[in-house]
Length: 333
View (cartoon, one colour):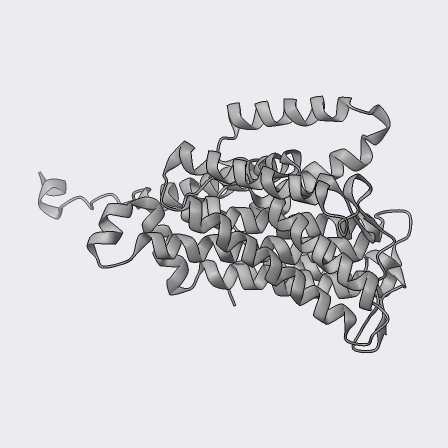
């Protein structure tokens, strides 16, 4: 059993008891952290393990939320309404990711990022114009429906379903990262020319990573729409795309648990500092400046780096040698 899996089991075990500890941590807050944690994991799959900076992830989060919400409003009473709407939301996000990635993937660096930004703004414009999205009002009062006989109108039931879906999504991302496919993505990230010389189609693998990342972001968006029963324009806005960048950088790019830590930090600050209004943005900005200045690898990244350096020092430390015994001839002399 890997260390990552052990830590994940401990976190899940702690999350299981949250509904039984009223007043300490609210289940709704934990569900929000789980949704945004998956969203940050999706972005980290693209940035941390493929080396691509995208500003289109809000388009994936929001498109999945809109599709899931619209289908739930119309077919939510059907026993299969929730599973079908959930899967349809993920498929919609993956389709949008394929369209955006197919256009942007042949560009590099800042040009790639700007193309994703421009295309995500088109998605935002369509969300404003389409009638079925609710325009500026968004989709409100989305029914949660039921899942295999479980009534999701109960917050406690929804919490445990969200925890199960979060665990499945996180383990999926972890499996992708540690699979041969994930190793190829990291090879493309580290040295694309060398990966191409070894026979790998770099553009094809980057497009697959982009679609996978979009699908996981849609997974988070569909789950978020069911949890909060609301999808708004903020879900497809540029602010959300930059917010997920902040979460990933704070936690640690290219780490498994970094996005979760970053999401918990940002969501926690927004939740518990809501009374100070817009100043919460200033606080998060100051934390980001401190992180960039002193923790460039992110909090989890710096922790792993320090642990690695300590392990290297312990292995390089020379063993103590016993003092040579005095030769009998020297003692006689």
